[in-house]
Image 1: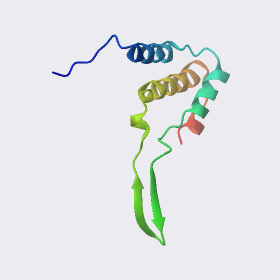
Image 2 (image 1 turned 90 degrees about the vertical axis):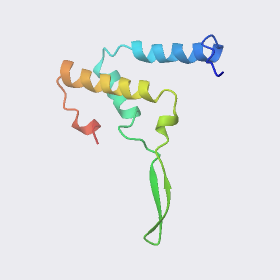
Image 3 (image 1 turned 135 degrees about the vertical axis):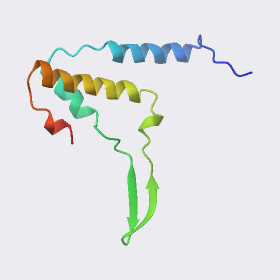
Image 4 (image 1 turned 90 degrees about the horizontal axis):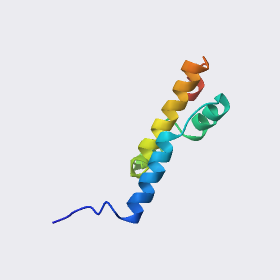
Length: 96
């Protein structure tokens, strides 16, 4: 019978980090812009490798393997919403 030990110290540390990302308050436009610049809108690791115009390899997106992927995406979304809603800025430069 496989059970998850929820009292594992590693799980507690990861949950604390997830909570920190979830509770991170974005109150400055400068901080929100920095978050949008640091966290990419798409996974930067997905690649198709060509050799003489023939696809020889495909590297799938590896972002989903990151245990904090959802927290990063949510933080970036909240920063974009802050810039658009509260600051009234044009966020089209961050959506590419």
